[in-house]
Length: 329
Image 1 (cartoon, helix red, strand yellow):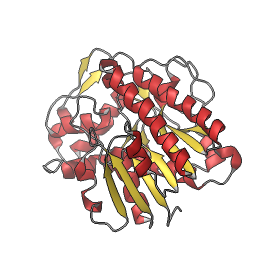
Image 2: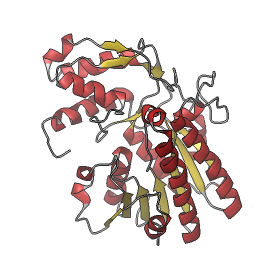
Image 3: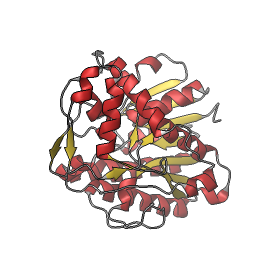
């Protein structure tokens, strides 16, 4: 267990970042959050603002001077800041590249100059693109299908290059469709699970892009938190300066996800049981299927998913149901 360390979490006001802040503060670490609140939410940080071990730096990773300030005295960097979403990147590739690539290099180089022990960064399953092999393994990728995917693959190449040039320890984690508490539902680019849940709660029909046969390796956020910590604490030389799939090692279709979430919401609101989906055209740039091989993370990081998709879906529905009437976010 990581404890007593100073950890910088970029994008800490976001979904995954705020959950990492909670985890590391509760373990007795000193946490610095760097966020410009372009997509992150202040309410995600509210309970920690007066914590003696928490520091908020409101700033942009695209500002190198801000990055240099943020990494001062830091043991580990957990880089979660990014402009996510495939549709957003198709609509605005310029901003996606500016934040996801230039901002990432700023954080990397600032960490290198400050002598940070190790940097962990969020990559994405989108880098696999049209790779035909299932399950997806780290050393076989296809053609990236969106600007977002290209930006994440570019990050991986920069990480490999900078680690070699400057003798850094850098580990990339390819997240597969992470979901759970604090995930945004009020954006045009919100992930499918919070969008479905809130549609049910509002007695509306969720939209399914395409025919619903596309499949995803949905990953509970607690498994992502575990992977980040394992990447920080490993002392195996062969485990650093590489990338890992972070997932559950399974896949379900979007139509099946719809049915599971409808049943979970119906436990609390029987009206949801009769709601039907509305099918809309597929979104450009999205892959059809993702199914992860997690054996590399298991063998080198001792990663084993601790929370099942079934358990996490129920817990996530419970969390959103409790938050539904909350106006703070």
